[in-house]
Length: 274
Ligand code: HEM
Image (cartoon, rainbow, N blue to C red):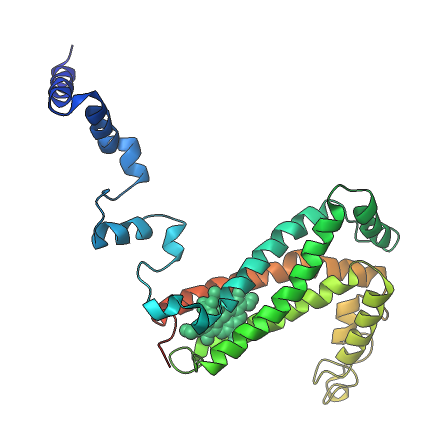
């Protein structure tokens, strides 16, 4: 037996004598390397350990260790930003499940959605969670923006985050718009036909828009052509809408959300009382 092992055995014996078996087990567990690598703070209920518990946990540290009391009041934020984020997460999860059943081509898309409603267990629930969730996100993001405006939270130092918010609003609407085409039904088809026709008139990048002609923009190289992957709504447009909807736009929104939340912390948390 090495010297060190002997010393440890002695300590354990002393510990059991002093604290009893349950007390000794607790003491050993709390001082073990495994426990201390998971929990890097004591168990006492003091303001310091409470703060350490939040800061040293990878999930909890997303929240600030301290928040102003009024920021927790429902009547101040209506929780609209939080609900918008929650809806985004729900849409991401239900969206991934929908991808298991959906083929982005003209032959299958419509029937995949019908099949989901009639043949897949809970398919109708899944589809409706995604569809109504999308409507909810658009509504709550507007209410969130309205709240931010009414509480004057767009003023310095939060003007940059207001700008990030505007980008988030635009991309939320684009997510809705691209998702509209995917069921390949009459509603989506004509909505996207009208929407992309409007894109013809975009300044600089639309062939019927201001300065378009001057810059050599034609019906075959303008923004509408890029969105549709051709001159009319068809298979290419469906595939492009699918890729933007499932990959491109969610990634962009996630990146801007990270900046949005980080900015809230850097600007000193939620704005003060009015
Ligand atoms: C995907 C869309 C968005 C999400 C998920 C989101 C999320 C949030 C959350 C969770 C907060 C914390 C306070 C609260 O819940 O109200 C917040 C604050 C804020 N948001 Fe958004 N937001 C979004 C879009 C927007 C838009 C469209 C704007 C404005 C154009 C905006 C501007 C702001 C500002 C300025 C703050 C700080 C407010 C304060 O300090 O009181 N956000 N956002």
